[in-house]
Length: 329
Image (tube, rainbow, N blue to C red):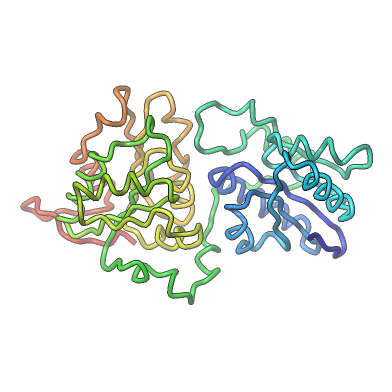
């Protein structure tokens, strides 16, 4: 699973998509600090494809089910045989802790961020707290990157593939991405998304819903009221979603992890968030307007979201207030 090529380094990132996006500058710093090393990434299965497309890792593996004792023992044996000189644990979750303990007294130099329990609760960003990441980088002698996550490299991974183009999904002309989150309590209502989808279609913007397959039932609910909706839930991988986001005129989301991938390739838009979680959910340093509500997501009006997008310059209306099609990128 893990080979040898000069220095052998392991990076652990086993939380989720939002955390993976947030750690991209750290991946870059590690690669620049060890240009000739074999750098292996340990992550979760859903992130393997996008991780393999990145310029930072030579090998990528998914963490096994630690409840399976035989699989756990075999995996730890392979890790020990790989003889890693350094381990950068950028997740610092339970998986990393278990691996740290399983490696025994002869474990490699191990640099870890603060435990996940110390992060702000309710955050969909899953990003490392800045002081923790700073300490890890300093302890490891790495240059701390001060830039925002940038996934434009994902656009080149399969740039000549037909399934990386909007037309593959029947999308033509200007379109906007609707990115609902998985939590029914926190996400905008189907009625709200349907209202926005109807406004978008009238204005010449194709409404495109994207996200995991678990959203398909929610997408059906939206489509019942807005048949113009293109429902891609469960139909795109992370590379395809990055390509769609890069070409989209805007996005509207409610704390979905996919939002962080979208903004990392330059997509701009509106985030709908409940008051207590709005600061933690917002991707800082981006052209994103957060609509904070204390009365629940269902209190946000679709027409107000559309006006916000217009005020951001992501869409335009003519002098008589009739929407016209404009592509923002």
